[in-house]
Length: 533
Ligand code: GLN
Image 1 (cartoon, rainbow, N blue to C red):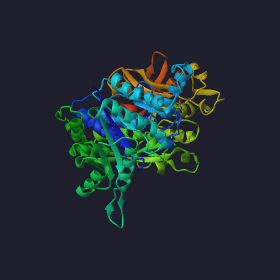
Image 2: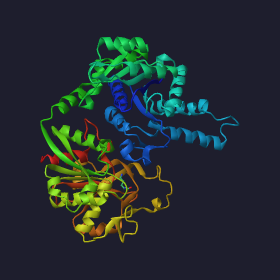
Image 3: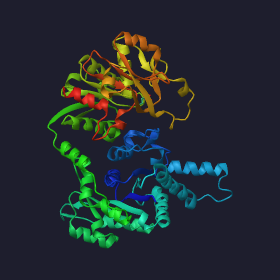
Image 4: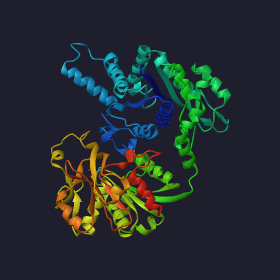
């Protein structure tokens, strides 16, 4: 029988619920259980694909092409399992499916209501995750904060699941804030008490509290929380602020959260295999060298917009015992003709241009790419970063001075980047990009081939525009190598400039497949080159 762990949040958002859920999943996996993860997001968008990254951060993409909340990236990086369409469900998705069923006549005359129709739909998504994944334990995080209007139907569905499956098969973890008050110099439990009361009003008594606090809460706070919240003292878990998020699973392990869960599930407490993770922490906490990498994007005011890219850089850094400091560069600012690029990039050992949409900041990114190419600075371009590398090369090396993409210059005479015929007829923006895994065949003798050490790879995509093959010969003649191709659709996947130290860019997003203990080959070689190795 599948067991279910539910992770809710109280008091404020941004407590690191996603990392808590991931850490619990990692610990349970390390004890030999098959785990699967999913997140419910209470907003009405059907998926986060059309949301501005400035509001919610990056859109993560699963192998099967689901555009998801960035927490899914944490999940995959921590548990090293590929998640899928059953892993990220929004209220919008739930409502849409219920309304579609109603229109189709599936409810046979019934009045369609929050309970049971919406809640049944939610429960089915939880159960579906258990069935399709074959996991022993499904860990489900509920986005938002308990008490939000939007999340009520989810909480109600969880209450029903507990009733249906029983205490032995469900476990509720409530993440809350225990703030420190200056002046009185103490930690305060009242916000947690209030949020647990909200949860209990909705019929759920949490089995464990994860208390975010600046330092360990100590016995008296734990006693108080236990008494007021009806949670066993040993089930009050400290979650102190850490510099390195990969330490968090070990902090929880030391407080036996996994054992507490397994005991309630009446599952054997098998030996935990955490040596690989402890080794990762020893490495990441003691990096010998450091380098600066320039990240040139247009959403740089919110670092979460590039979270998988940043984590991927870090992962590669661990391999080379090097801390990666990011030089965050707002591409729009580079557009000013007075800007001194030499000054801006003076300490950067590598330049990365990540993905993006729309026309803002484009010329600034092209300037950064030109600077990398002309000064032979290791360069990695991702998705839009690849498209712009091609445009830059066409303009400044091949003399096609008006080369552009129809995304930001619809009437350009030289659409080096353009829509494929199948994209031209699309009217709906949501979920219609080229999404998820596509095969890429690598050309022997290229940097890409060397990086991967194989000739066929699967990589995740999220874009609408493609390289226009009409221009291939001209660019090749001038030295650009098309080292990765999707043969089925004849689409360019990777380009490189072999006459330079390290210049490579991919149409796909390698950052979604990097893992802390297994950096992605393209990030690996980029950091290696940037370190001068
Ligand atoms: N805007 C570009 C496209 O849609 C690139 C997308 C991206 O960088 N993810 O093709």
